[in-house]
Image (cartoon, rainbow, N blue to C red; front, side):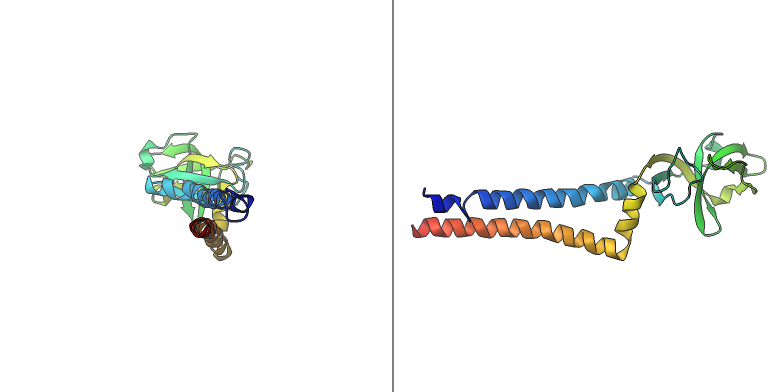
Length: 177
């Protein structure tokens, strides 16, 4: 084997292209998993946009909400509920079973919420929260973010195609020699 076969189009170039393509594709898949897999397991995912639950749940966090019957909600649980057209996550101070309402309060708020939350507005209990994951969700759900993800994945595929062509070129040169 001469020096030309290990240079451009030899074994190093295709290997590096394959590794780069694989790493790119794995990073795209890994970054989408925290948003897709929990939905398959029955969780709703929301982005936190206000500081009412800080420092427990910081702005930019993603919250994973599991559906639960209102009667199972305990004092101290953080619940997600509809208020007008927004989803709010606050801590339950009291679960008023007879009235069918919750008294809630944001951890960062000085006083409890002015209005009790009707059971019908309950989405579920916050099962987990992950800082900064909500910001990634916003990026992925925007039009520009979707274009970036598709382009990044396409780059990974192109690296694999390039690796295949470099390998074919090497085989042709070896067959000619």
